[in-house]
Image (tube, rainbow, N blue to C red):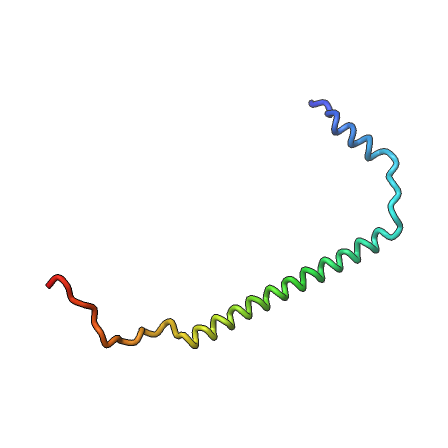
Length: 84
């Protein structure tokens, strides 16, 4: 069996003692802060989705104009033959 260490004893003594008084509007302030944080996260998420959508549309427009899957047009000139 181990003896309780000094830190554990100190924490137990602090928890048993008188608790400090809390401000009466603490719950309201915490709820308001939570609402602001939630709203901020929703705005950031919406902006992220809109940026992703804009990137997909821009890539689609670029691909439709450039057509990178098509073969390049044939050239009329041939490279010089060396070493024959």
